[in-house]
Image 1 (tube, rainbow, N blue to C red):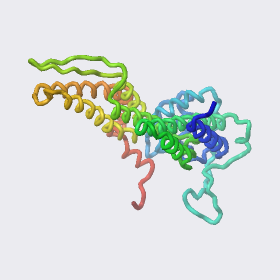
Image 2 (image 1 turned 180 degrees about the vertical axis):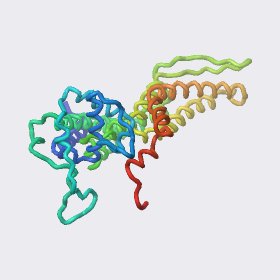
Image 3 (image 1 turned 90 degrees about the vertical axis):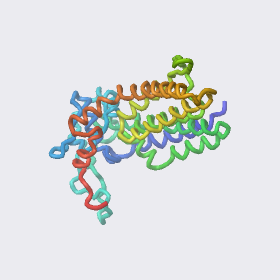
Image 4 (image 1 turned 45 degrees about the vertical axis):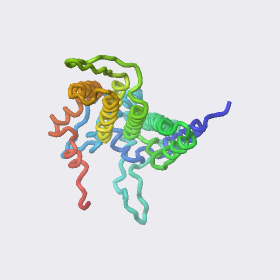
Amino acid sequence: MRSRPISVVLLGYVLVGFTYAATTPVFEASDELWHYPIIRHLATGGALPLLDPTDPGPWRQESGQPPLYYFLMAMATGWIDTGDMGVIRWLNPHVDSGVITADGNINLAIHTEAEYFPWTGTVLAVRLIRLLSVLMGAGTVYLTYRLALEIRPQWQPLAVGAAGVVAFTPMFVFISGAVNNDNLAVLLASWTVYIVARMGIRGDTGSRYRFALNWEWNRVRGHVSLTHGFLGVLLGLGSLTKLSVLTLLPIAAAVIAYNEFARWWDNPNRTRPQVSALHSLVLALQLVVTFGITALIAGWWYIRNVRLYGTPTGLQTFVRVLGRRAHP
């Protein structure tokens, strides 16, 4: 049986991603030095770390990131004894990070034979998280393919090409092979965009709870579908992974509103104020279901930020820990 072209793209991506994951020295991938300590802290029973400009800790500004990725990776690696992290995470005091120098001292960490195969302890945990992150990236590649097919169903070569561009963009596949919450965030964001695009093209398909609203002699039929609920779950999980996913909330709201507007436009009695009001009520119910689920999943994190840092995002404290640039 012939393999579908997307299978070839996915296989090639996984091979390249696993190669990066297995060969990039531990803690040399982008921000791994700060992401992994959060995972280990949670895996060993610690509470969520705090943003503290006076004592940044081994996680620095990354402790201000939403925690879903860290919780999941802590559960995946909690069985590994990582008591050697202090030895493996040996910071290079002479690193010229981001600066071109004659000696080329660019390593963020000092590496020893403890990183050699077979992997154990912290090295094993980091490598395992990297491999899981590659699989998250594979999900993103596949969703890119599905999104392109949703937009142009007859253009499979275009869909495969779009997936290939994502899969083999060097920085994407490199970060996919790293300990980084971007991997889960991009997966959830891609899934959300796919669902939103599908809703915009096909309407909110799926099982529906149907109801009717009446006002005087006017009657409007409405529904809330499983798609609304699933979209709320994706937005909630995404918002609990990275702040940038919040930008998808207004896009999702706009598509839900567009679908209800289309139903209002098709209603022969749309010029009646009561009919318009009833359609608006249907829209409000759909938005409440979608974003109510989002709030139930992720709202606690943003309430915590308000209590700790005074704002829902905590970005001002995040920047204070990271350090402001001397120039734009």
